[in-house]
Structure formats: structure tokens, C-alpha cells
Length: 413
Ligand SMILES: Cc1ncc(COP(=O)(O)O)c(C=O)c1O
Image 1: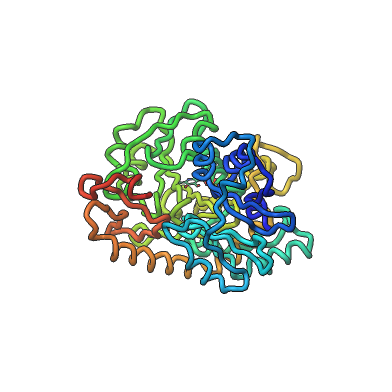
Image 2: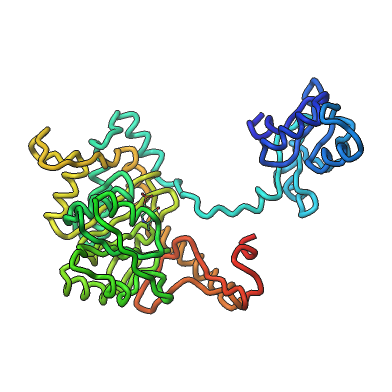
């Protein structure tokens, strides 16, 4: 019996108070009353408890008299699809009983409607590679998969340097440190992004300065960035949001003019192209995330890319406690432990073998959504500039509630 199923069972002699407490703790809003042999006798919902109380019962009275004995049940011997077909907007829960009448599963309408935002695809060599780490004992950051993963990533990003780290946030933090961002500096970041981008600036002792994004790309607007530059500005972090690249030409010109470092946040955009260039190869540094909802995943993990050998060396050193390469326990900088483990990299190697398929499939699905939803009044499709190749990371839309006749939240519901 699963924990979910067990959490929905109560003995027949339970009181209304006990049933209410259980309903309050559970997620399904229903309990099943069972006899001593665990055979289901009836079902109780919030509504049944309320009706019993309104009819004069006390909280200390037995709940069983108010239970519903006549409800739709699925059979464990029936095919799963047949049991699911019993659910409807009227029948929200279907208990699946075995031949003795004991609850073995609980199907819920809400669960069936759940479409996951992202599910990692781990059906390649991931398990084989991880098993290899376990059987060989190479589970820390010292193993061979880390180097292999970095090589694969570098190859697919113009052959520059690729340094595997423990998260996308660690990648951003190391990138800022490696280009020398420190106390008193300012770093321009978009006002629409994930919090990690501003957090790492603060962790460097610097000040994040927010610049607005533009409506066409949902990424940094070069004019807005220009208006935020001061004598303290040291760097700018264009975030290729939701898989669509920033307009990098204008940004790079501006950065050159003001001697700013450009750190691309590619956490949501691995494989996206600005003109014909991969994101992460355009600025001084590129930062990637391999959290489980990203294009490829290592569970948690990240990568720093750069064509600058000095930045690469700095990142490698800072990732490993600031220890000088080739001179163990000699620490030139106060570094971090931001290393990726061999276990994570083992997953990453297998993921990289399939990344082209992941990107192709994202495209098919993204185009399909646009084909079907693009003409619905009030729905504004995600950006797709002619100079860009988006990767549709978490297909996102804007809702014009006047045109759509409903708000965003109503649409979500
Ligand atoms: C734009 C952006 N930057 C940075 C991060 C941080 O990456 P991580 O969760 O791997 O630390 C994320 C991801 O969640 C992100 O979406």
C-alpha cells in the first residue's frame, strides 16, 4: 500500500473530529472508511462532514453514519486506462479496489489533469554512466566524466573553455569574480529574470542595477542599459530569457565603448542562436544551468564557457578553493567549493549525447503550440526574432486580458 493510499484510510469507528483532522492534513479531500480487514466500507468528504454537523451530529460522534456507501470504484484487475476513464468533472476521485475490496490506488481528476512543466529525459546512458561511477568508486569531482563533460560542452560551444561547476548560480558567481567584480562596483542586470542573477552580484559586494527588458524579446533593452551606466559600472548580464537570445550586437558595442564585461546568462537558453552564434560564446563569459528543468540536466549543476584563457584559469582556481593549479594546498585567492561531482557529470555526458534531439523536439512542440494558439485573441506568443533561434524554454505567453476576455490567472485555472 502506498503512503498516499494509506493516508486516505480510516477505521470505521473514527469520529467526525478525526475525519476532519485527516481531511485537513491530506491533499485529496477524501477519506475511505475501512473495516478490520481493510475492506472499504464508505467514503467521506468535507461536504459529508459538514452535512452531518448541520444535521445535529457532534464532533465526537462516529463519522460512519454520514458516509457515502454508493460510489464509483475501479478494479485492480481492470486495465489502468479503464479505471481512469471513470473520472470526470463530476466524479473527482476513483478508489481502485482489489478483489477483497481493499484500497490499492486512488485516482484523482486533478492529478490526471496535471501536465508537468518539465520532465527530465533520462533514458539514454545516464544510468549506465552513474553505475560506472558507483562501481569504480569515482564519485567526487576527481573522476573522468567531469573532464569528458567539459570537453563535450566546449566542442559544442566553438571549442573554447568549458568549466563544470555545481550550479548555474555558482557559474554566475565565479564569472563575476573572474572578471574582477568587487565591492563598490555596479552590475547591470535585467528587471525580468530569476533572482540568482542579482543575488550573485550582491555576494560579490557589488550593486545590481536593474534595467528594463524590451517587449520584443523580453530581454535587456540596450537603450535602457545605456541609461543605467555610471562610472562604477563594471559589467552587464544579458539573460537569454525563456530560451530567446538578447540582441547582442548593440549590447557588445555599448560594452566596448564603456569597457564593461559582458556575462551571458544562458541558464534558460542552451542551444539558442544569436544570428549564427551560440549563446555563451558571444560575451566575455557564458553561464549555464543544469537544474532538472533545463535543456539538459545533471540534477543540479552548471557550466562556465569562455574563449579567454585567463578567465578560464581564474574560474578553475576559484571553483576549487582558490588553489593554484599544479601546487596543491597553495591558495592565492579565497575561493569556493563549486566543483561538479563525477556522478553529476556522468549524467551530463549522457545528456549531451542527446541534446540535439532535445532541441529538435522542443522546436517541434513550440511550433505546434504557436500553430494552434497563435490566433487565439488575447494570447501573445513568445518572442521569435528573425535574427534569433529560440529554444522555447518553458513555453510562455502574455495574456491581454481585455482581448482574451479573462485574466492570466483565470486562463491558468
Ligand atoms: C535565468 C537564470 N539564471 C540563473 C539560474 C540559476 O541556476 P541554478 O538553479 O542552476 O543555480 C536560473 C535557474 O534556475 C535561471 O533561470
